[in-house]
Image 1 (cartoon, rainbow, N blue to C red):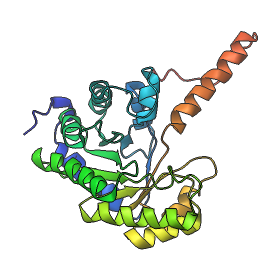
Image 2 (image 1 turned 180 degrees about the horizontal axis):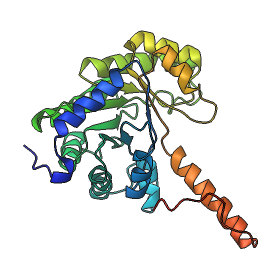
Image 3 (image 1 turned 45 degrees about the vertical axis):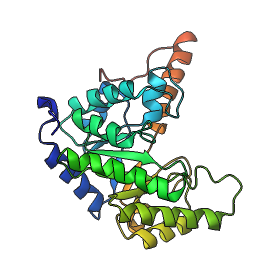
Length: 265
């Protein structure tokens, strides 16, 4: 059993809370964070019920390109600092598991993480399913019902394939991951209403997880369609960096800091 630090106490209860938030009729919105101050800022906003990290954003903040270029030790340290900074349940984006999903998830639990995204990267389905099973095994060995948001990259890696075939792949892969014990299936991409409806019908209500990007369906409509969870990936960091760039441009042109700026740090 993992030796849980005091700041990450009662992980079983946090995992149960995170799972229940996915199953609730009200859609779970996770505003992604990448370090302690972004986590504390989002956690303090009324309506925030849980936190999710963004691997792309964490990697960028530490000088790495996205796509498992960050060493696993640095990723675990980063998500651990976030988990220790809040009493809320934290789900971590652990990419494809850094070569060993079971060990990576076990290490993440050890620093207070109770759920994770694991990418299939469109590996052969049997291999991808085994990958998801190994992540869940880590939760069992550590004594918690780990909340796996199993990600399929069917749309992300679609290229110029027929959209109907891409959607069929996402359905097949998602149903397979749910069958091995995933809590939800994450299908990133700019999904239209037909795709969302098809996926919800295939998986069941409150089992589909999506990312919202510019042009996505609004949260209210996604909730009506039976989606479990919305996250925002690297876009929240992009919002912050856009504000920084705009302020720097204004300051260098002789302007002033924006009115209403808060001392959130």
